[in-house]
Image 1 (cartoon, rainbow, N blue to C red):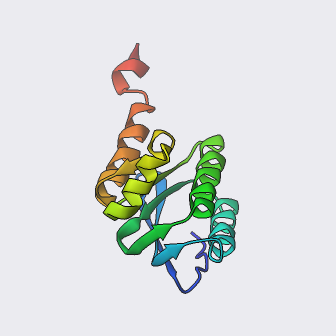
Image 2: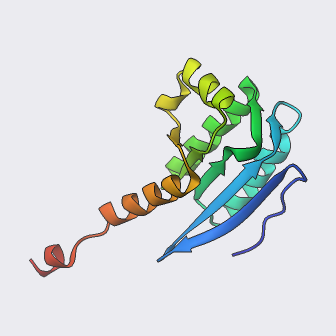
Amino acid sequence: MIRIETPDFMSAADTAHEDRAFTVFSVRGNLTVDRVPAVETFFLRAIASGRRDFVLDGDGLTYVSSTGFGLLLHVCNLLRDRGGDLKLANLSPAVGRSLRLLSLSRYLDVWPKTQDALCAFERAVARFQPSTAALAA
């Protein structure tokens, strides 16, 4: 895959399982109005290069503003329209609480650990692949 540049407050790494690639990324510090344009540019370039499944590892994320949450919802919708998804994982208690207070956990897929989110992608892939028994019928 093509490497996508990230701003200095972000990191991203690609991982693969069978025919599906996943991009795990993190944002250090705050996701606020001043950082949203750079994060949006990262997503648009990544989507244009063919990536469609993302996990936000929230380990270093301390605060998300309403603009930041708006970006995550927008990206999630873009990805779902293309057959992909955005999952959030490893969020701090403060970010998780904000997510719940805003009722965004109904729209955004949240997992306790990054590995749990990756496994959820893998289960979804397996669910949509026909079994060999179904093919033989």
